[in-house]
Length: 341
Figure 1 (cartoon, rainbow, N blue to C red):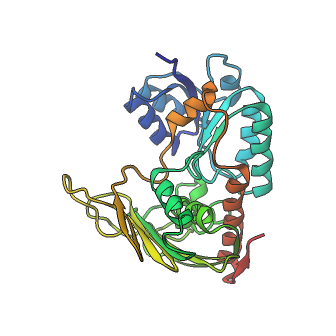
Figure 2 (figure 1 turned 120 degrees about the vertical axis):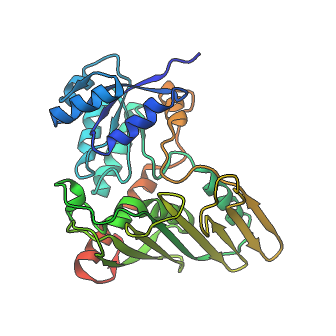
Figure 3 (figure 1 turned 60 degrees about the horizontal axis):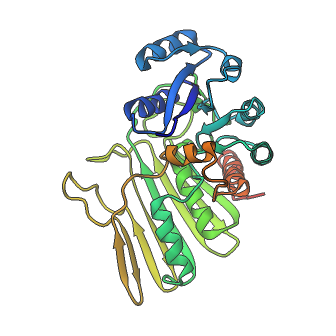
C-alpha cells in the first residue's frame, strides 16, 4: 500500500471545509497532519475538531520533515509569495482558485515551482481536465459543433443577508465582482480553455441581500479574440431546491450545441444524462458525476510521488484567468468595457 502524502493545512476559515473533506474520507491518498492559523483560538478549536496538532507559525510547518505538502487556504492577495516560501522549503502545494491577484507573480512562482521540481495544484483550473471538459474538448476538436462561437453559464447558491466578517470577502479590491470571483471563476477557466485568448470584459452587478460592501449578483461578459462571446451569471441570492450549488452551461457552434447541467437538479434515484451534444449529425449524452472546483487529491498524490511527471494545465493558462480577473476588477470600478492585458 502506498504511503499517503502528509499535508499541513494553513488558513482555517475556508480551509476548515477542506479539512473536513480530508478527514471524512480515509480512502483519500492525502492525510491531514497539522493545522495552522494566525488566530490561535481558531487553530486550537479546529485542531480539536480534526484530531491533529496545531500551530500559528507557517515556519514551523516548513521546518517539519514529516510534512510533504502544504494546503494553502489564505486570502488570494500575495499568495504567490507564500507559495514561494513553501516550495523553497522543499514542500509541495495544494491551494485554491484564484490563488493570486497578480498574473505576472503567479506565472513567476509557477515556473519556479517547475524548476524546483515542486507540485503546485489548484482546484481551478485543474491540473488535468475534469470529466465534462474531456468530452467537451473532444466534441469541439472533432468538429461536431463546428466553430464554437458563443457560450452562457450560470452558477448560484443562496447565502442570504451575509454580514461583514472582516475577511477579504468584504474588500472589493481583494474580492472583485464577488460572485464571479468566488464561484464563477470555474466558468471563466472553462471558457478560456474552450475559446482561447480573451479580448475584453464587461461587468454588471447588484446588491440584493448581502450586508457586505461587495455585490451578491453579477454578470461577466468576455469577448474573445476569435470573435466568440461568453457570458457568466453568478449569484449568492438564488436558492436551489435540491442542491446547495447549482448551475448550467450552453456552448454553441456553427453546427451544433453542447448542454451541461441544464435544468433543475434531479431528485435522488432520478439521475440521467447531464452532458448532451446536439449536432447536425448526432446526439450524444453522458452522465457526469462530481462538479467543478473539486480538489484532485489522487492526481496530486501521484505528482508528489513522482508517478506522473507533468500537468496538462500550463502556468500560462492559470495566469490567463488572473488577467481576466484584473480586467474584471477594473470594469467593476469604472463601469466600462476593459481590455484584457
